[in-house]
Image 1: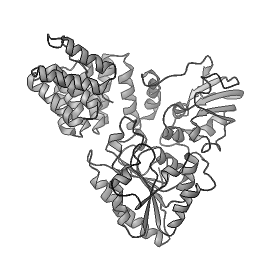
Image 2: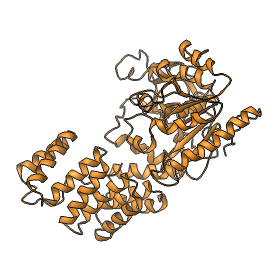
Image 3: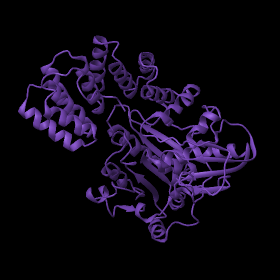
Image 4: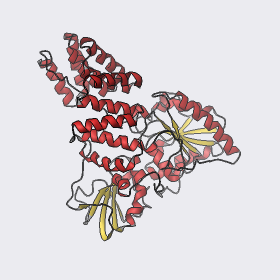
Length: 478
């Protein structure tokens, strides 16, 4: 996430007004809709207040109202031409709209005008990374870190850039600064943090820290942990317990058990799960295979009935959105109707695996019935795994099910936005983390049309391969 300047650097007579301060206070309290209304009222009363236009633009971007954000930032610059701090907010809004060339031009000019301004330099670095220029971005991250050596936010952004570039040695080390971000809540224990040493006859507490997908991804390292010691306790969300029951752990407990004082036993070491890749010095040459996860012996009866109805067709699971709370979900997700043309291909039957707030989109676009819904019929990831083992293919935008499908060996086509999660690297169609995964990438930011056109042609070919008895075909990961 880029770091906008939420208020002007200079306090003018207007920006010191009670109405301005009240609007700013609403924003600082996280009351985004109320702050927007307050600034909208303010610009009606004082339409020549450039700072009010700027702040309204910055807050509209927080609300994902990007077109309005750009227009407001441009109005602020019209009233205060050449103001670098205004330019950086405009650049941020333009990045959100995938107007990357304009964004970099604006950010670059702001950095030229104020080369020693930390926030301007930081925003420029983030914009460069988001628009596909990680090497150049790293130079500006280094410059920003030199300006404020103790600023952990910019160190975190640089860590993500290292991972994007597969510079894992630096990336894993820098990744530990995540615990100094306000959205993360580090656990403080008297016991030692595990550093990779043997722990025979001792107990190690390992705990998840982020989303379902990251937990499935990094659970592959748990056998390597167990090989170095004695008892392993793993804390994770209950929805994963059945799925991960085959891991070599001595005890699976619900997230929060230890901090609630309900663990009921002592431990000697502890570590968050996503620190394991760094502990084991992971790079592209030594990634362990996906976890041996557990799938239910059968899909839930209602889901199995729908699967059996079309067992002679090419059965394709689809997902169009990950978690709506994920900050970049708008970049990676699409509308459900994008997938409907796949149902035109003779022999194909689509199944929705979508769960959560965006499930209703299927009915809204007329796809219900044409696409059979399995998502509402499963209770946990082990049920979903049972379904995945019966599908010929999953086509989806990135979410936790991508990790699940990759773990059970289901052929999966992962449709990636222009700058995807660091895991997927760049300029390759396979994944070293999941052998059954094929990657389809946006080549133009925000433009999904070529991606779906490419997938359509590939799906026609896959159906023909199945008829010929040569499906699936995996591209061997390096």
